[in-house]
Image (cartoon, rainbow over all chains, first blue to last red; front, side):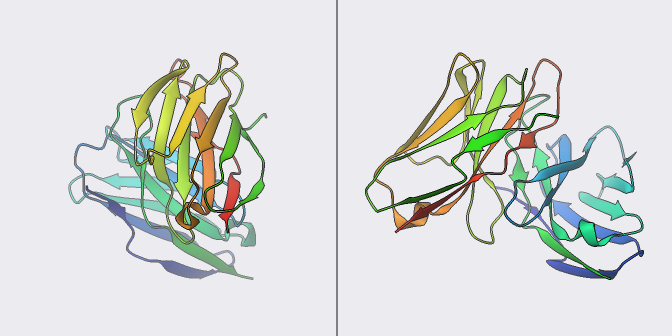
Length: 114
Length: 113
């Protein structure tokens, strides 16, 4: 089947810098996208989501951008902190509102250098 | 805030044994999902339940079964365990009624020896 993929498997950034994590998806039928953060030994933690009728959504220190033309999703983290170090997954969903058969990407490991 | 609770956190079983994993969703969440995450892999959807009925089925082996009970907790039953079943098993919950995002528990790490 079609998969969500990630451009960069690892990313190292200096503390205080901004981070950008990218994701490419291939299924144009996907209508809902989520970014998750996963720390070692823990489950994926919801960060931010976006629906296909939007191209940008902002949260606290995070922004998700959706470019449906090129099927690209990105997560921007402002003023990256050591606590942001984790694996970040993007996930897409096609099952309609409220039902989540998520297809996850392969994950990007973010390392923050103090 | 209450989160998704999974038990046990760690489980060690031998080949051909059975295992039961439990999941307690966030209060007022009506939908439960099970995912499997192999070492270094992304989570893979197994199965989901809405209002105690199976909702969707993913890559769940025939050796596995699951159900959701009247109190909305769910159990994943795994039989004839194989070495390849060693993985993290996550439960997640959401509310269709309130269209909430999917929230995950911290998982059960199953090791089959």
